Length: 125
View 1 (tube, rainbow, N blue to C red):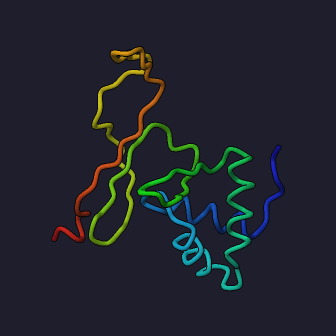
View 2: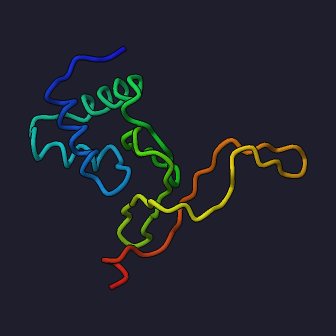
View 3: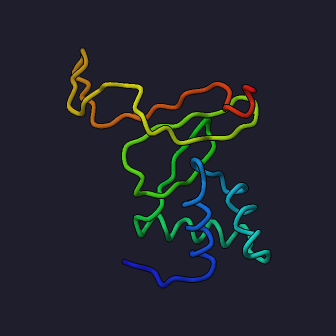
């Protein structure tokens, strides 16, 4: 079911569209408040829930922290910087693992998600 658009939803979607990778709720709130200073954290959580139900945003967990990104990004992976904490999208897949691969013991691969850890270009400089 498509939800009606609001200024809050529009602002949150714009922030996610301009982000270099998935964002935590505090990161999303901080960036969205640049456009809507009165935006509160409860509204962000409520909006993210609606956008997930609508299939426009997906949640993922990196190191136990929930992060959010647009759902239309297609197959991609992430890089997490150990110094600044930033998380970035990686367009290239570092793993050649086709869906349907069967591992010993009968494990059938349906999908995979990879997060690489290290230093981002800014922190490595």
